[in-house]
Length: 114
Image (cartoon, rainbow, N blue to C red; front, side, top):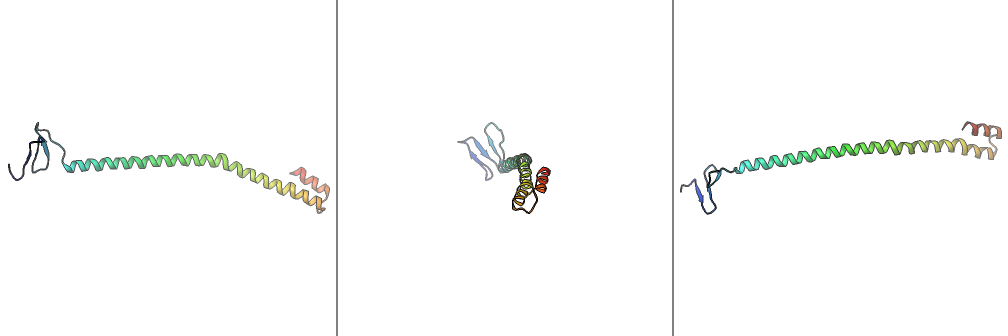
């Protein structure tokens, strides 16, 4: 046995100076560098796929948010505008007519216009 070769015959392995392992049948196994490159590539692939899935989920959530705003919040805003117009046109006019600051004929005309 030389200084660059270690015999692990009990396990069926021989380690050479190039740090590659061979089994008794002569098949070669991956070096540590190759294993690390494969592991790094696999982790990179996983991270990129997770980023892509996150981007897809964000774009889906944005679509749901836009739908929520257009279907639910805009009608509420329109309803608020109608309620405000009612308060100004009808309620204020009734209070003014009752207080006598507006004549009854003018109050009826404002109610008809509203």
